[in-house]
Image (tube, rainbow, N blue to C red; front, side, top):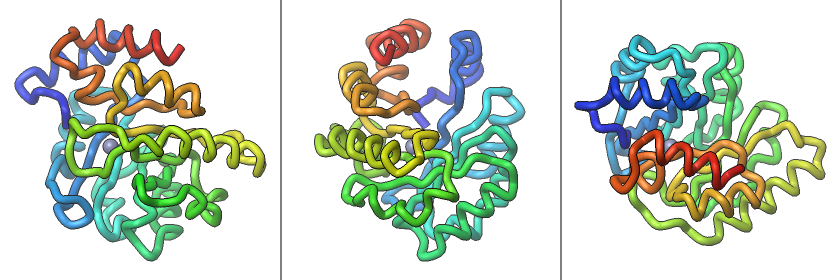
Length: 212
Ligand code: ZN
């Protein structure tokens, strides 16, 4: 969403040479969040342009009806919001059945304990650190202790293998704090990798440096 469409190939080449692990794709439906962004055709074209695995973040209502539209592949992450459907197990199971890695996403106002009954169905938790909808928002400060508490709770409940992804204002300074709190997947957007103050390779190197 943050990449300049005119320079998309150049951006993808920089990501490939920097060893970026996933391309995070924000899909918004104008209902679950107040914005429209990337959709099925964009995902199809992106898979044609790059072999970096996708990490598809579905900010859409009733995702269980639409997961197949995105043709999930083994090795990809798909995240669905706990707030977006009354049938979250159905959505997570469809991702798993397709061979992709299911991730449960929680908004800043949602307690992480809402995933308690999903733990056997997920590989990761996506902690939103801003309310989803737009790039360039300021961090909701309670996200940092939330990540730390979630990490501790997962470890103590026998789920140390479940990863934590952070999304929203992952700036260089915030990324360091998120890392210390226990996050291990970082969605880099306009406040780091796409910051106008850095080249993309320079920003990636700086981000890798702060998260160690
Ligand atoms: Zn996202």
